[in-house]
Length: 258
Ligand SMILES: [Zn+2]
Image (cartoon, rainbow, N blue to C red; front, top):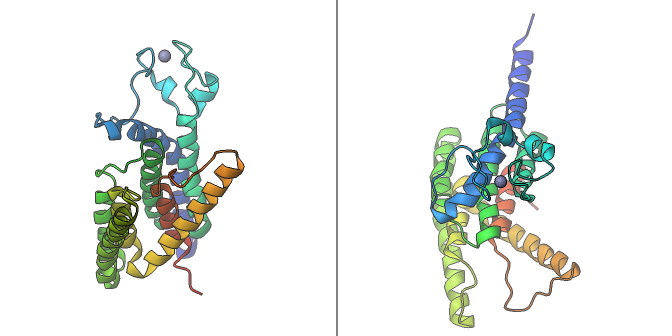
């Protein structure tokens, strides 16, 4: 006889495995989103043609990771190198449920993955294009407030305040920077992303998110310098990926207390 505990356990492992199985396909979709959204191109569930020769892709050409490996990273029709982009984002999408499974099981893991995949798309677009298109951060703010209202309604005020504080604080910093240095240092997109952080995590977690993003950003700049990339006062790194990473880690493991 199954007790309610073993039923819960079974449901939890089904949720975890289904998230893991869905991840490569979600990654493939995120790849299409990252390439098309910044240019306002229509987003289909999957690629339909080779970007170089225009050959129509069959279902077999679209199996995540496998099709790339089978064709040795080249288009089967024109032989053009496909690069690392699609396998890269598919692997990153798999890393999301793998990381979430460290802390959560059951239906929560799907919520973790939803946030993680959304942040992954935002971060990747920011790295490629230096922008965070509005169709991503703004619905993420709303999603954060809806999730809070459903799961933890007592925190709704704090999280709504978090969204406002997240947006305003980075706007103020950006204005100060512009006044002092005479050029843009932070994009509007960063402020919208921190608003989303606030909506998911609450106002109290924002200092940790900003600090975490700044520390990982400096660490990345240090690694680039060690790798021989010369960074000057005028060089910059997009801040969005670090805000996204810090948001994801505080959501999973935090908020951290001293
Ligand atoms: Zn081709």
